[in-house]
Length: 85
Image 1 (tube, rainbow, N blue to C red):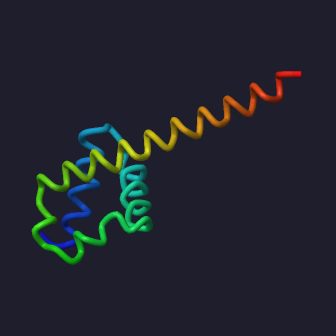
Image 2: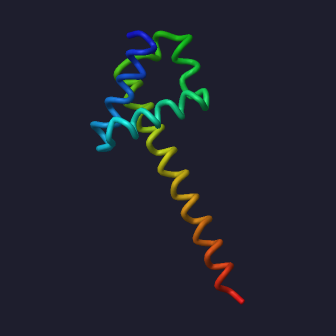
């Protein structure tokens, strides 16, 4: 599949597997592109498969979840520091 078709597949999988709306899935893929996540996929056609799209969708989603969790923990620490005399 082409690079663009591959990105569409990853986006579709994000909506199907993780119940994201289209806008959220597109944002995850665009952000991953901005972070150079898909550079190798552009160069190597063998990385643009449905199986690889499933792996990449899972990786992108999990990375975002981990980032969100870290941010929440940091915010909680800030709130606790303010409460502690």
